[in-house]
Length: 380
Image (cartoon, rainbow, N blue to C red):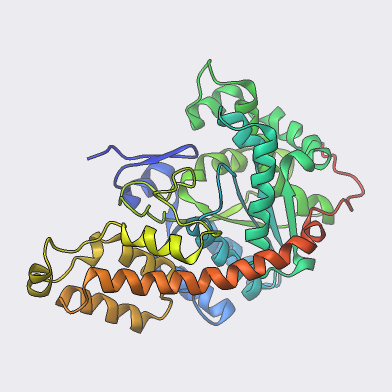
């Protein structure tokens, strides 16, 4: 078995999320917190009901603020090392739900500089192009134009950098190296990067000239960055960001780690055509038996099946329909080939609509870029 590794730059192994809760010092999302979310917005997203978003930092305190009339903003993002996958869309779809239900603004940061610094095979032209492609996928989900600011780091440096250097002044090299696992051979850009990723946490407070709470939905592998951000926030006079953390969507061929945008055999991309999706899902790892006879007799093993996990995590939001798929699998009446075809059809229906919206986004992309309407972006 591959040893569990979870950090911003590598995810491997069979992930033990309970272990990560203890290791990272986050809190589990319990029924009390779920009830508070439902009380505020009237329902729960299926990714909350099913435990995909499983941990948090101070979300209960944020909800108390909100219940007293204090608005917050959302912040999420993407480090573009390859094309956008359906795995990326999971947390973005949830972010869109939060934005709509709480009626709040969203900052979406695309860290093309990070991927240039960390990936020796990518140049700045390539990472910048990937950044714009990621922006199209995010906008295609239907965010309101007036409530979304898209940040491409290399193109918004004039806004980000004056804030980043003040954050950097409060971060020590030893704390960054210890948290991120860097060493003396790591380039200096890598060591500085967390300061850039922290900036959107403070932008709305700078814009409004008062402390504005920020909620960050992100994959648990990114937690190292935001632990550091929380460490310096109050030193700069700001609130610590609030966080909500999600699990990983597995790759097509393995339950270990997560879907990898750099591996076309592991991922379904948002730009894949129908035939490509069908072919990829046909080759996906399942929890099926060796033969049809055994499958009918013993039933499948959906808890070990990547195909079933895609229904669970994204493509079957109806709990009753999901239960039917599960029971038919374990009962042996649903065979893997049929199940894969059902999933491929669902994925293609979703992607067809998404690709139409993605194309529409091209003509209005610049409307979503971070507005330079700050009186000043300097903080003491």
